[in-house]
Length: 513
Image (cartoon, helix red, strand yellow):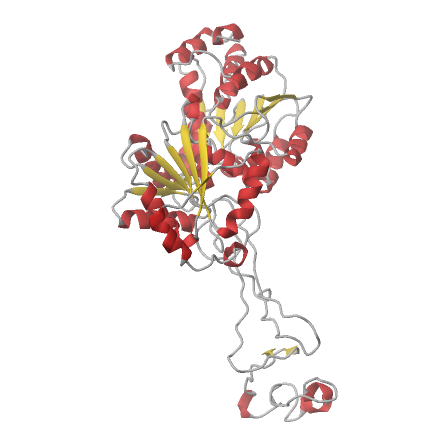
């Protein structure tokens, strides 16, 4: 297909497409639109920036306009689910632009804003809803919205939607909509295990893949610089001195890291803003709008911005931290070199992130060229302390979330009775000492529970009783009572504390209270 008119789309849609300046369909559009117009399920895989949104928006608008129906209060006909607020807003804007001359009503639903306006919007009835799963279920639970008459279901960024963080809400949503429906999956990446799960929800799907899974944009010039963590701030400041870096997206692994980078840039007079999960929706919108308008040339973000956000003319993407999920790298660098333009992606890699780099190169099936560290920073890098292991710092990082914090940004606490007890020191019994370590799990930000450190100079013993770990030398109540475990000394024959070798010693001094 060399022209949109060859698809047989509604003439009003073609006028809107022409007004947007679209000349000819992209490969994903050319292969997907005819299949969707036939009413078949589809799983579409293509790089970011290749027009996936128009690939499903145009045929959906055509189908709904061709089958006019009375608009039902609290109802809708087409449901598009996306993982982030920003992506939902962008999709809804495209639907409005393509269907501005049609008698179809669209709406966007996501958290972080007042629910009252969304309830009023649903009461009037909608044809198309673009939503995140959480807020959608909130409105359904309040009976402000019904999805019992959905005709078309779309999952954009399907691999993220089907991952652990969304699978349970997604299954609940699917159980509420009619089985006789058209289901469409679109994403830039589709891991095999996620693809198998997606196909179980699709009926006789057509798979369209215009590029191999997880290939990177061809026009992105990629490079990596090996640099210690302590030198990364100076390296970022130095590369920003290049006037060619006109509009730069900087990606960090955590929310705390994004805020820290912004503070460091502002200290040297470089305006910047951050968007991540701890920012309110108005804050995120202001930051993104300021970046698009050119009020600042640097936007620092977690992977929340790597999924489907189209900012025109992004010249550079900087991976300040390499992502621990290799597919996220594809989405990150896809923010530049969109719609045929060229772009540059620079990644900072410390010693502990080299495993992530290998995963990325394995997934993309290409080696990323290595750039040397600037000479004036090489001496600082040589004297920099070794990078602490990432797993010991924070646990394996989660996308877009700082660790030890929930979505509200407060440290999570272990329920009472489940805190980790301090581990005993090595071993009269030969058991090795273990260091307590909490790990951040996928899709959650789980707090770290640390054992209480042992007092300096006091040996720890293997036994622990109700009063706490042995070796702390806690005084008995009232100054009398049972002796401390440390005070009993060691039995030379058994290798155990004397109060264990002589059970009768436990109850001396009044016994257990």
